[in-house]
Length: 186
Image 1 (cartoon, rainbow, N blue to C red):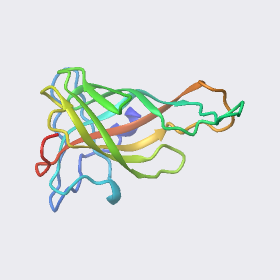
Image 2: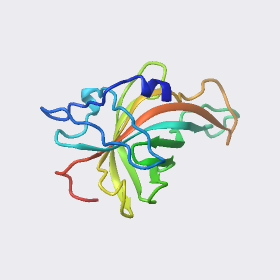
Image 3: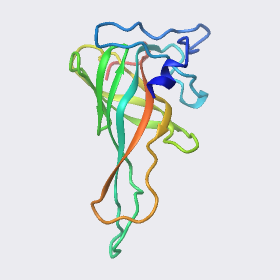
């Protein structure tokens, strides 16, 4: 995934009429990350500004087998739970169930919901999520929206499974955190 991100080139996102650049990488633990093109259906509000862009260095979408009452086998039809390490303009972020994101630099923490998907063939969808809670000050304190972009892998396994079985499917993505000045703090 890092090679894909590095090959994207100049940072751009047409949030309104003007081009908006991702913030510069700050600190020894930070890396520059380009913001990929964003499908119209999942763009954040027009005046939003990126506060950080991060790529998945190691991540899985974890699926638990769902077995109907009275059945002996089931399928991985439920939602996945993420477990990922991100690296980007603001250092490192841990992404985990909730879904939640926590800065390893300053411990700021956000959770999000209300995903708007943009399907991609053969991979998990790209998303726009709305931040629903903030904890702490720091990197993620102003985040109002999150994009999951340039996804690869992470698709639920097919076939039957047994109750309680968990499968961890590797995935890659670029996450962009957005501040929308018009959104009241959560």
